[in-house]
Length: 167
Image (tube, rainbow, N blue to C red; front, side):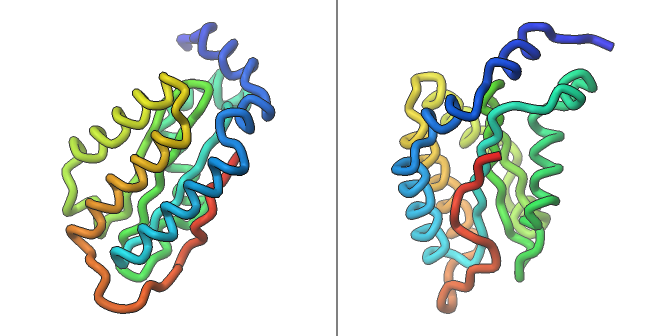
């Protein structure tokens, strides 16, 4: 077992108030508004989740942000959409790692490199402390991909909530 002590310390030091400082109620409202606008442009569904830190058991097991994002994708039922085109934008704040998990309907149409480019842009913004701007830009870029492959052809239907989730 390869234990990363620096990672463990980062996760132990990530308090709930640090998450709230990065994502204030005003920032969460702006992200929710961006998601609501996004849902008007396509028939996909977008969820945004911020998790401050992993629990100690997950850390010692070496759980990656990607593996955790897949768990959250399932827990929040992001896959449960009409066209199998739900998209989870997941931030593990202690690691400053952004992961995008796309359901099979959109995943089959968008190359992994495009999702990775969105993640790297967001991580860059977050490194500079621009959490709201990075999150909104990320939602906008995901929106563009969904709009390209699943444009709105009827009034929007919300299969999933638009509100960001803090875990």
